[in-house]
Amino acid sequence: MRGDSTAERIKSVAVQLFAQKGFEATAIREIADAAQVSTSSLYHYIDTKEELLTEIMTAAMLKLIKCSLAVVDPTDSPPGRLVALVRCHVGMQIIDRLAALVTDNEIRALHGDDRAKVLKLRDEYEERWTSTLTEGKEDGVFDVAVPKVARLALLEMCNGVARWYKDDGPMAVAEICDHFATLALSMVNAQRDGRPLRIADVTREPSVALYERLVHIAKGGVIE
Amino acid sequence: MRGDSTAERIKSVAVQLFAQKGFEATAIREIADAAQVSTSSLYHYIDTKEELLTEIMTAAMLKLIKCSLAVVDPTDSPPGRLVALVRCHVGMQIIDRLAALVTDNEIRALHGDDRAKVLKLRDEYEERWTSTLTEGKEDGVFDVAVPKVARLALLEMCNGVARWYKDDGPMAVAEICDHFATLALSMVNAQRDGRPLRIADVTREPSVALYERLVHIAKGGVIE
DNA sequence: TGATACCGATCGAGCGTTCGGTCGTCAACT
DNA sequence: AGTTGACGACCGAACGCTCGATCGGTATCA
Image 1 (cartoon, rainbow over the protein chains, first blue to last red):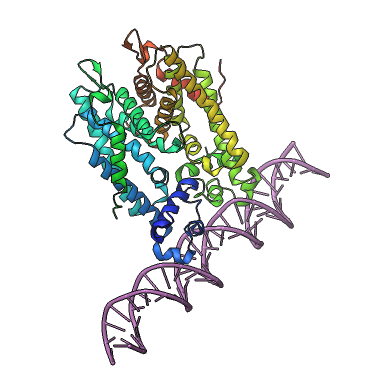
Image 2: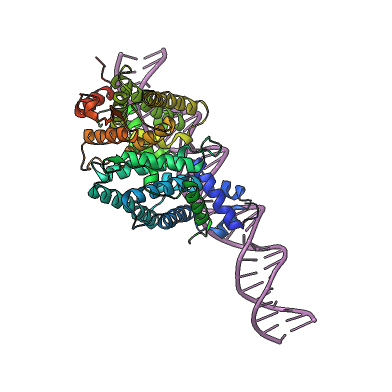
């Protein structure tokens, strides 16, 4: 990170500070200090503090959507897509942990168009979860009373990962992704021919491989 | 609320504002205005802004613990306790929605002993979830790989309720509690004699009755 | 008499942001 | 080849404002 450009350094420390202390509790001077520029120089790179937050959140959402599009095959069965969605989402919560935390916690700091823009991206993304669950229910492969309730429960449980994950924890990332995919399949009672579906019934890609693909895609360029 | 004492009005508007805008984004003057007192009068009732937050969070946690102790029978089977825990937790997220949101989102605004105190209460509460899951796994009534991961997933999905619940939504509160209890039983693969357990296998108390008990206890009612 | 409830005025600190600069780089023009 | 001027990167100082908190009061009532 030392070798990064000033613009990148600013975004990077801003994400860290926003995640750690919250948007409102972070002073523009702290960001400047941490990025080793003066406050006036900082404003050479950003318009306003709020616009900086918007950029961070938009970038994080776009990255998440990009990864999920790359990893979830729309022609796959609902259980296959669900497993991919969960693995991808949980993986990104960890890969991009700080940005994910900020995106989740600081929406209310945004106003007007900025907020609407980020929320639109989120809704677009969540719709893919809803349709997966609804389709699975119609196919009889999921047994779940109200797909939208299941979606809320699933997404919240996956978002939570960014809140408790620690780099020095006992579990490997891929392991966590698979635990959550298993929990998700159970939660919606995924079954075929009366038999509960497991991850192995639904995909052959090991989650380490998928995780590495995610890391690669996530690093592959920030969409502006 | 109009008839409440000034002290109660202050706490009530503070919870609302903290939940809506966040602790740091809420000015002491806004709280005073909303509570219809001057800022100087406000300080007649509170020590500092942070102590006000601490009190709100502590009260919310104590209320949650009180309700869960009243509603979860420690001699019950793990599935029975899990259903009670989920119903109670989700119910309280709705009954005490704003305080629950604040407790969940604003911990980082607390420092030192205040923070430690609230975290201790939370850990104490969460431990009851962990032991329920662990015991259920040992008994073979839950099929779950790592109880602590399941606990994290369960609690996050239940906490999420306060984030999306709307009073004018299409679902009754008791209905939501039961949806979540069902999802929880599925998630941990609760079963007996190879048959998946449902809420009805585990408790006879309808969730409307339990919900009304919760409201009563939360309001300060006595447990008989 | 003294506690309780309240308030206007004001404190110093810190906030996000702007202003008016400096310094080096590099393409364009003489 | 040497001069010019625009430009990007950067900064010290300060602006107007709001922040949490305090002080010295008054009015009420037991």
